Image (cartoon, rainbow, N blue to C red; front, side, top):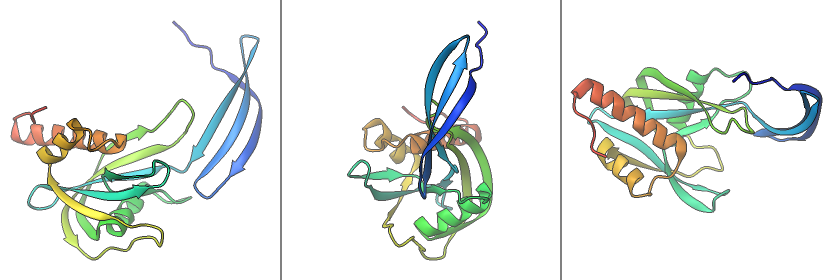
Length: 186
């Protein structure tokens, strides 16, 4: 089946904030008019940092939108005009206090393509050195170092619910399987 691309006939900016922009587009497709609400975002980075002991770095932080603490891989926004890798390097140090000598991009993923253009760049960071946290003024994190198996068990128990973290841990488990040849238990 071939899908017809919708043609934008008008666009109206409703909000322009520090993190997101919101617009409403009017579209035409095969004589029908429809509305699309679009959240625009600069994108973000997610860091799967692994210590020399094979532990994965997670951060526990309060998320206002959910009014609860979440366990997540370190992550953050890409500033306007910033490249993803330097953003990932900055965010790893800000949130965990670690820097890494080895970086590898694992994946790019859209967070909510039905209404948002945000893309996340997932990196694997290795050869970590503790430098000291450099949190933004409104951030507070607790850093945890867990084995991949411990972290995945927390996913299965519903203790880790963040989608980017679940995806990152899943990709790390695939890497571990490729290196060790044995699948991680589910």
